[in-house]
Length: 440
Image 1 (cartoon, rainbow, N blue to C red):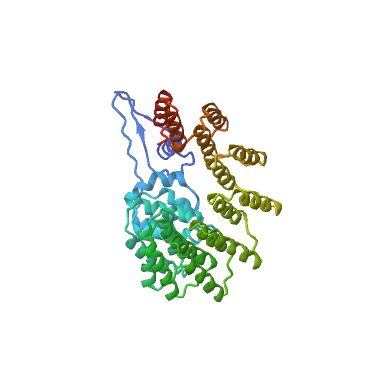
Image 2: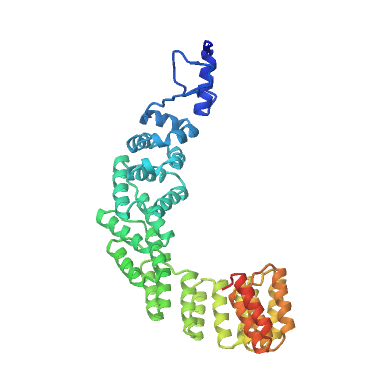
């Protein structure tokens, strides 16, 4: 047997650092006295040993941004090592945020996550903290109760008095549309004697209304008063909107009077909400009274104020009044939205006045307002109703040129139109096309 050839020690150290740890610096190579490789046909066996990572060495690696090395050792870390390193880095939220990308669910616990949240919440922008919180919530790894207790412990350990960790935690539930858990978190805060910010309460109120949790909306609003969480104009606007949706216009107006006694001034959104409430009840006169009152109080109506009235006028077939109001709106420099134009176009289509419908369609295009699918749906429906199939097809072609994708309403209008005219073949072809394109 031929004798083994000894390798130069420096070469072996370089080989060890580059092949095992993926770095040419050899920073994490471990000393050895001798190493030889024999020239035999037997397989070469290498044993590598990575010493246990201490909180101090992990902290040092994070502080020097050795992310590649941290990724390699992430499986060997323990929850205690991670949480201690995080605590030591409590004044470096940016580094902690970067480190969270390497947290491994297999060797982290709730303490690690809650410490991370409490530290990165100190960043000037809440965006990163909120995203991290939403990711944790979505994982469903821990219960809302366990996370709350973990955040309480993290705040106490870090000596943080701010409630931002809880406010962002509730906001995370709100953005994920998990209304019940958001409300439960609110009560956990209440029992702990920690009051959420008014913005957090407003987020919950908005979510409850969108989720049709009407009872929860009123309960939360009452709790806010009991806890002396001062409402804002935005808070009152949310509640006025709820009352208007319930058709309680008189009560909504009482709320506005109440907010004024608290020194809060109703804004254009407040009045627009009441105007929409009257319009929903087809009470144009009531809507106009509110419109005039807001102007008398020095609050200038906006595009939505005019749009609501124009829509109500069209529903009552008062098209001349609607057109006149549109002109007044433009005189004061307000540009109608596509929704306002669509209201007029749809109204004239229902009135079978295609000339005026196309007049407003052309006008919106001249003003640089892109017609929507709803615009074309109204026109196509009116054309087919009058038996003008060729012109309806021209509208469909125009939609394709404008890169507007027909929706289920478009297809249903076309199918019904061709069915009425006896063109069953075209109707079935459109039905198949609708299914193929998933427009259901």
